Image 1 (cartoon, rainbow, N blue to C red):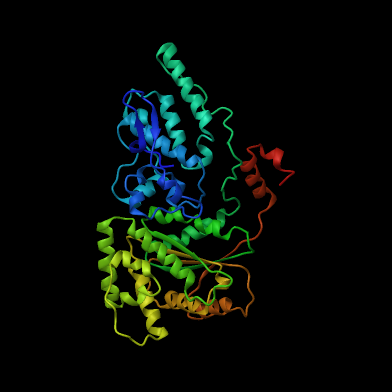
Image 2: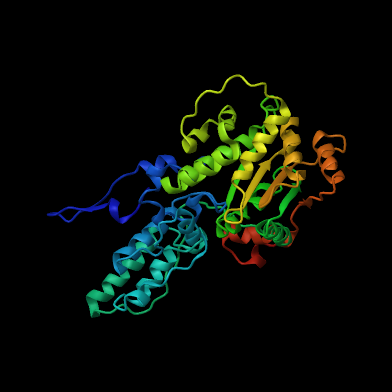
Length: 416
């Protein structure tokens, strides 16, 4: 749903409440969790949940509406939004990391318990919010009964017997604290101007992608961009497929930032590429959203070296102290040779700054193309950071089970 004050209508005579504009529901699904359409963002970004930003590595469910409802309550009672900024990236960061000022601190007439209800609705993680709307309605009805009885709302325990209306598997990371810190350390180096390459390997389903996606909050905090692509097992005949997928997402992110930012990126792109922008169009047609239509170029012999150079210049447009770029490419074991060679040239060129390249792959032999490319990178003197993920131990497994079942760890230990 798209819950916000503008979408809540009240009848003049019957006082009935109606919620309108369900169009965003079709756009925000598990397959499309990032907001790129400016028409969607306009007037909506202030109300979306942290997981709805697409930068939290969390799926969407009904509890995202409870967050938006909390923001709506906040605005109704205080007269202002919890986060006020016209900068989309700043607003996204606020939803992800900033704690809102408690409503009763802005308006002393708001009961402290009502303030707590709103803040619970606006919890950053879904597990900390109300787990169903029936429990919320119960607490609000209790408040209403107290007002009717004595005019005051006294303290009482919130969300008692708050059971989810569906079976939710909490998306928590357990037992990977060391790896997460190592990844954050690499990103800190990137923020000082370094170019870093991290390789994460492990068996299918071991949690490589989930681990890597944890860096998104750190990237947003630095106003950077996190983009990702995935190679397919039978897609080696499509050169640069995952890179193009990632860069397409980057263009769409920029397109969502408003005309002023688009004009800025347009200027930077033309400064770096000139009329060779048209060459990038062949593999990245979305770029036209930023640059506008470009005139046809005369047929120019395009060797691989020249194309690689243009591609590297294009990536360099989006790396700077103001917005470091993180590129995550999954399933590198299926990457085409052209992609691997381009990654090697980008990493070892010595000209790229503020770039964090992360690759994930299943275990491969030493004669695999990926292994040989990584060896060639090390031969240049550039040392990637390697993380090898193994299975979780019983204690970490038990931590996940207790989150899922909502029970004491002693009870679930035999199952773990």
